[in-house]
Image (tube, rainbow, N blue to C red):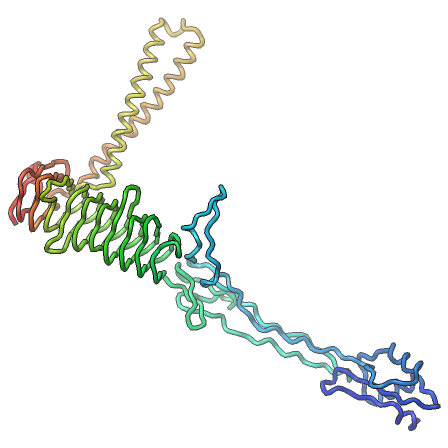
Length: 459
């Protein structure tokens, strides 16, 4: 047996996962038991390849043949982060419309997240699965490495520690390896075809110009370092424009709070707070829910229709060339427009009602209603139903007109129009429901309403 032992050699790999056998040929044959006994003495107990034992005995020779193989451990997977926002890595592609056309102004430049949105999900590390070596010993796996969820400013982690959640609405950003949500979207260039239209849930800072025919909407403040050129703007907070706002027919600027700009020209603007302009407002249509002030000692308001609920202050109003300029204070611009709308609707309904009444009188003129042919009676019934509906609509309009008439006028005694320079002919002034046409040049005056008429007085 010792001779056979000398002829059968077992070698185990350093990692103990594989065993190899060598059999030196001789005149004395070896058996399967001989091979098994050699494996047993080498403590090989797992993963023995039975088919190789049969083959070795048949050939009576083997040179470093794999005779046993263990199972390596499956190491745990490291924790990972699945991002649910692009963080600026998505491709900017123009939007395709249902009709097959492409909107090159909608390229997905802005990524909005709302408060409560999930920004990222952490996939936890796994434990792994143990292996077994050829000695039958268990091999522990390496556990997956854990990582921290990349929480940045204005985010929070869910109770289970696996979700990163936006704690405010804004734009997702990466800073110092963490995900944050910024309430301000910074655009370091013009708003043009490189950005497309902007629609953002927070505030927007444009470090350039908003170019012609583009749209910027934001729920909070908008600051523009250069100009707004013939663009559509809708701002839920304040609008600050370091240079000018320039418009054209069909473009509108809507501001829910206050507006500050250097100059306004040819623009259609609706501001629910105050308007402060440095140089002037020229040839523009303005609706203001507060006061309008042109601050320069050469500031001008000239041309267009300027409505302000409260007061208007400027150095110059109108121009030496007689530019038609309408100035209205003490009257809510929006309620005034709504009132005009209901008055027009009332007139339209009255005309329709007159036509219906004429037709009813015509049918009744045939004689007693019960003697009318059936077709005429049906027509009469339909007309009376229309008559009833029109009277109902007319009453609703009358009620709303009465409400708006009481609401539209501001405290007239508190409003004024002031020009520290000159007011030129061509200027028409309304304070509440009374007006005054400027027919001669005035200097350093203010206008008020006194006892139902507009008066001007020296400053």
